[in-house]
Length: 449
Image (cartoon, rainbow, N blue to C red; front, side, top):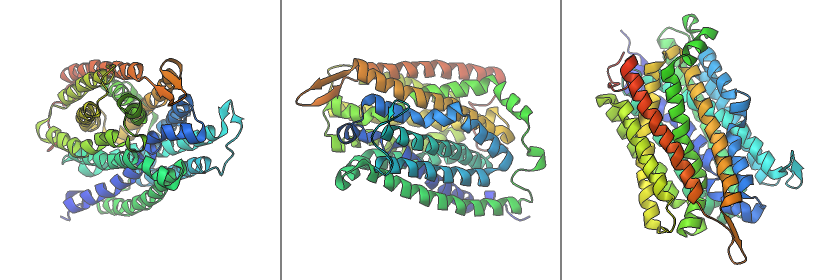
């Protein structure tokens, strides 16, 4: 019998590498503005609330217009190739609008719906980009399940996340220096836009490989028996385990990704790090996950204990954010130590959470399931950054003639700690549900048919 492409290590790892690059470009654009909050305030006249509103735009269309949900339905009906290509095109279009707003090509003066014009145009571009980024995320995840089920699935998902987070790390470390060298935040965004165009071309290469795999297997990507039905949505949303995974996702990521949006500003205001290079310390977090997420994913593949891994990660997160909130401790070494620990926690939960979904939801409904999980996650990614921005402006801001605006991050860090505590409680509930339903979250992945 002829060997399927998915049975070839070279073929499936090549496919993984290609889609991982596309996601790396998406992650860079997602976080390219994170180190630039201070520069936006000084050069563009943004406030913390403006920055918070812009950051919250990531979830506008995904949450209110149900774009993520529709993307999941499209993925299950049209397949990986079509949906992934469309998502990559949308990312490029949204990033292009964001660049035009920050480069001054679009109007910067006046207001739109009570919001500064530049802030609004940049936010709309970011919102459009996020539709493509989130749909690309669920598409790549389903592609990995397709190529790696019964093999190194958790390791593959961990490696994809690790490569993608190189984009986050590069954005956190180099976005600010790049903007200072060229004299404007738009140049950092332009670099991200260029990466996205390359990422689109990379996904087109993957589509050729994926089509060959399907033809070799003697099937269309979406066969008639796997065609989308409305009843599939009902099967997903009536699963208690699915909703526990969704809650864990939104609570956990609400105290990580929004934290990264403000982490550079935290380093400047609490730990006295130079603004231009303050992104180096938050940049340690994604760099740490590059090695640890695949490592923990490999453990899950071979040894199991997925629910336990998620509990440990959530517990660490509670302690780390609480320690960040302690007033008076402003040593950069202390900050580096906590960021390294946060990188470990940030590796533990995703390495077990994403590979656990196929144990709860059948493969033909995975697009819908991942889309709904990402939709719930986007509620947090939309609301929490805006909440933190408002809290900083109203309760934590001090203005002086010498330093200008400065911020006390005690209350925001306690907010993040509260979300982490809730995620810990949900992780315990998920482990209990696994014992009751027999999902197999504590069992290894490798060898599972």
